[in-house]
Length: 598
Image 1 (cartoon, rainbow, N blue to C red):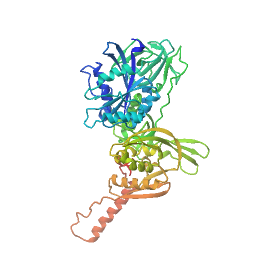
Image 2: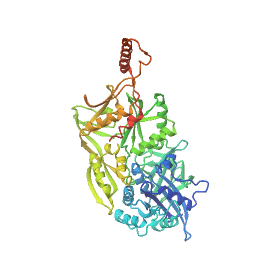
Image 3: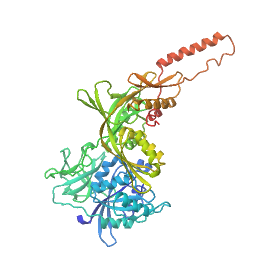
Image 4: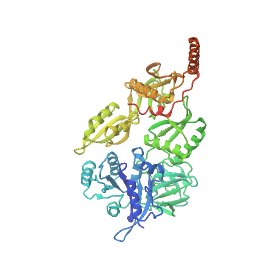
């Protein structure tokens, strides 16, 4: 089939607007899935994706489509991740397409990620097909949503397709629109190979399986390919298309989407966004948009039982084979023992990794409070990148400290504007823009420190807006801030896993709030437990967990008072000795309380 009969497209939407359900209906309508293979959210392969109702990993599928006029077409549907943490993967998946279905919920309207993903698609020069989904719901307002698409995104929505992915309404119109509106790919099969790597996963038998879109040239089994970012070359051992299971083919050529297997054993050698070309006849320039993914959020993962360290290490090494954006290195905590300092793309990415480790490998884990990487400039000119409060240098040798800022875009109904503005100001934000998109919908753009945003910002935003707010963010830059380390001491011993890097203006309030929280979650012992928050050697807040009192006089039925005093004095001495050697078990709730401070 010629390149003119190929259509490469994606589905973009805000979370929970019906993207995966629409993909299911398209696969069913075109006969890709048999009755035996049908299941909800087919392209979401992980149980975690189905339970949470989100797409974590991009999944391509090839569809053979027979039009009403009798023509045959090949559709390559590339399902993209649906969360802001994976926005780079979304951008690379969109770069592999010529068009996209812009799905908007008929009850919710345009939300933050709808707008962000639409702009990503426009930046990649994609042809957008507006689809207003969930028209079967009682609260659906398709005409209002049609106007919102035009006013907020700025594209013509007069021909927007009204659909219900759940009921199968509008699917035929969507398929015909893909043929008529999305242009065929441009490319020269005779030119040097230029292929975009937009996804990969690890197979224990075949090595790394790379999902690519060919822009120019062709590749066949036995060719030597080269990764332009690393310069390394490999021999192609297998080629295939995903339809929906991987099916072997002899060649792939310009315009097609397929998989390349070349016996690569390390996922880190195949970076998302890289350009693949032939070793003997390479392309002169790389495809635009490639960048190295760096983790933004860091946290310590420790096993509850010390003998689980080796199983945790083995589990992380297996998990990282399928997720190159996840980083780890061993670390030791005086409070928690041996564990790993892990880097994540965002909070959702952290939750997914931790949940997969616990579920798939039967581990019990304690996670420390997430932090960000701070740039600390010393007096001698050296720059340290510190993501662990335990490594935070203190004293006069520090010249300045910079922290990462993000640009946060929030969409809210107008009645919640005041509360959300106060929240952003409390989180040390700087307002960039406020705009009324419609009479009742407002867009607020703020510059916020990433450290403030990853604590409890999203929870509070949802609470203040009764669940109506939607949020999108992107990394901005590093900016100088007046930061310090807040230490937490339990009975005089610093607990490094509870330490925080905070702004000096907030240190006293954070210290007070944290000690009060810890007093409630640390269980009572047979001796008094002192909880202190300190800046250096200066204690700024203190709470105590009172000792449990054992009634040592219960067996004294009368008798001389000196006998009772003797028993009480013996108990007092025992408690004093116990306090000196006593070990306090700090529950996981104590570490979570660092996140949830008012």
